[in-house]
Image (tube, rainbow, N blue to C red):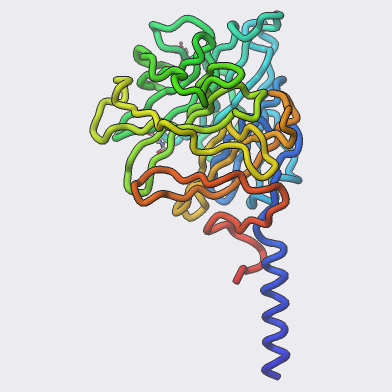
Amino acid sequence: MLHIFNLLSLLVALYGYSTHGFINPIKARDGSDPFMTYYNGQYYLLTTTWSNVQVTSASTIEGLKSATPKIVWTDTNPQRNNQFWAPELHRINGRWYIYYTAGQKVSDFVPTQRTWVLQGGTGDPLAMPFTFMSQVTPPNYNTGMLDATIYNITGKTYYIYASTSGGAMWIAELLSPNKTGPGILLTSPIYSWEKQGWAINEGPVGLTSPKGSHHIIFSASGCNTQYYELGYLKLTPGADPLVAKSWVKNPQPIFTSANGLYGPGHNGFFKSPDGNEDWNVFHANRKVDGGCDGGRQTFVQKVDWNTDDTPNLGQPLAAGTQIDPPSGEKSSISKY
Ligand SMILES: *[C@@H]1O[C@H](CO)[C@@H](O)[C@H](O)[C@H]1NC(C)=O
Ligand SMILES: *[C@@H]1O[C@H](CO)[C@@H](O)[C@H](O)[C@H]1NC(C)=O
C-alpha cells in the first residue's frame, strides 16, 4: 500500500512539475518593449504592436502564450495614429491608466512621437473600456518623446521618458495622471556600451529593492544591434529625484546578450503574485542581426538582489528553459 501511495505522489509531483511553471518565449512575434503587471489573480502583458494598444491577460505566465489579446485602443487622429509603442499599464489612486507612445504617419515619424494616456476603470483592468485622456508632457518640453513610465519614490510619483533628441532620458514629477511638473534632463549616453550603433538611453523603468533603494533600469545602444542591453541609475539615498546628479549611472551594463538571446532590453518589472519576488519581462532577438521589429520575442525571468542592494538580473536564460513560476502563482495542480 505504502509503495503505491509513494509512486502516486511521485507521479503527481512530476506531473505538477511538468505542467506548472513556464517556458520562454512568451510571445514569439510582436514581443517588443514588453510590460507586465499582476492584479487580482491575473497577469497583464502589453507589448508594442505598432497599430493599436493591446492587453493580454492570464492567470499563469504560461497561459499568456495562448490567451487572446484584447485591443483596448485604436485611433484615427492623424496626430497619434501611427507607430504605437511601449504601452504600460499603471494603477494610480485606484484607477487604471495606460501610457503609450504614438505619432504621425509621415516618413520622418520619430520626431513626431509623443506620449499619451488612456484612462480605464477601477476594478479589473479589462472590465471597463479605456478612454483617451490627453498627451502627457512637461510644460517646458516640446519635442519628440517615447517610452514613458511612472515610478513612485518616497510618496511622490515621477514620470520618466526618453527624448527623440540626443538619446537622453528625462524625469518630471507626475502631479496627476495626465499632468507633470517641469522636466529635467536625467541622463545621456556616456559610456561606450551605451553608444553601439546609436547613442541611446531609452525604455526607463523603476525598480525598488527589498531594502528600499531606488533604481531606474534603462536600455542602451541601438535596438538593431546585439549590444542593446540594460544598465541602471541608482538614486543616492535621500537625494532629490529631480536633480540629475542624485542618480549615479552604473559604469557597466547589467544584462547583455547571452545563451542565444541577442540585444535583450526594453524591459518591465512586475511583482510575483505574493508580492515577494521581482520579475523581469524583456524582449530579445534570436538572431545576432535581428532588427527593431516584430521579430523580437518576449521573455520572462526572475530578478535577484546582490548583497550591496543592487539588482542582479543574471544572464538571459536560453529559450526553452523550464522556469519555475513566480511565487504564489495559482495552478490547478499543486507543486512540490
Ligand atoms: C504610486 O502612488 C500612487 C499615488 O499615491 C498610488 O495610487 C499607486 O498605487 C502607487 N503605485 C505603486 C506601484 O506603488
Ligand atoms: C487631462 O485630461 C482631461 C480629460 O481628458 C483634460 O480635460 C485635461 O485638459 C487634461 N490635462 C492636461 C494637462 O492635459
